[in-house]
Image (cartoon, rainbow over all chains, first blue to last red; front, top):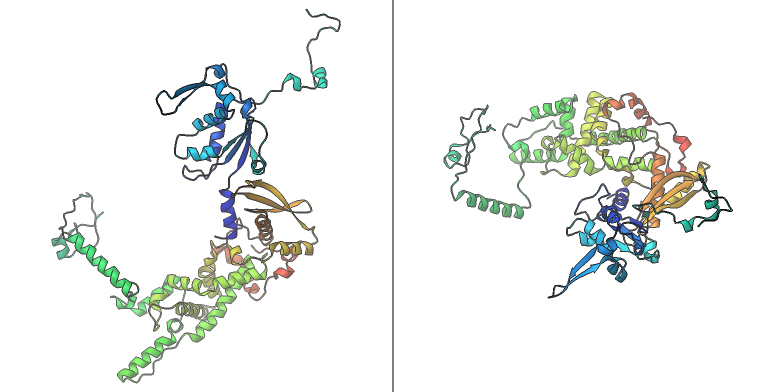
Length: 178
Length: 355
């Protein structure tokens, strides 16, 4: 193989390392977005047997947001295989025990059930906070846009921004609110 | 589909074939039949094949016979067909001389003298013709390369010329125009040198018969086309691309090359890839990729040189045939005019592109 072709081959089949911030994101919708990157379906060289999946590093998995009353109602089932080994764990309980599990399970389900799924999920690196080990950080090469734009909290607005914000009406200074 | 071959009576009797001799050529209805061959047919054929394979292995390959040992061999007709196949006009004597080897003449004279026949054979061998043909071949390929690759340094022209006039390339061409059946030589299967000698002699014979112009077009159409699909940068690339690039930019009065990391992925993993960009005075020249920074840097320098020499992967296709009509005179002119060597290469000197 010529030098140019060798380098072209190497760069075509190289793996990307994406960062995904799960702050206030719906894990199930995020999983749907992340699974094509893990399987490699975003690439023109994709084939189910090609093993061309990328790495995805998920941060702030502690801060994910489930819809409605799912925290109270969603239940994760597990059976140890032994008699009386069935257990039903609520989402908030599971999140307390391990803040990475909900994200991981969601992505696992989003990837099509086949023999490469276990390999793909190995390339998903989840961190509960925003700290990433140096070895992983130096690998990063891209970022995936969050599914829902993160809203800005009132406390995050500066005093000047609040004062200068266009208002239709405001109470007079000497008005006393009951 | 109806069969166009005849089946012998034995085969029909043993039903090796389902087709009879009297099948009409226009088969309108195709009747599918089941295969009723005797139980001993397959095992017999299998055993015969097994024995043939063993014997061929012992003899160093299956037996090959020269075409002249088969039926309906007419050397004069073959010679006539050869020149017509190529669309060229050859002098009969020149062509026959070009195809006759010294080894053949020696063998024939020895054979006849063994028999006792004293003969002064009128054969002429192709030694002189092949010598002349080799020179012409060299000249014509150089002319074409210099006219088409105007931006390229002389070292690469020489490498391309060496590739095109190498024995393996010429042997491929010679085989494919059918010289294997026409050559009169003592060795069979013929050696590479025999093929190459014959081909060179053919070129000289053509120059003698139809003129140098026709011979030039012949070489362009048959030999130079072997360059098609070949990555010319694999035939030659400078040993120190970064150093050569710096020298070229310095000669042109441009700023020193600056290498910058553009992209990277997986630096800590074994599948890491780096993209390095090459800039001169903040102007982008080229980028290169690699599994390490050093490789990426070298590839960026190589890409820059390819860009200067106009030999990138996306370069224009080589012109042949009608596309060369207007530059044949230029090709003839450049046969004796080498390109600039790499040590003096500068883009101002090579601005004029012919094609």
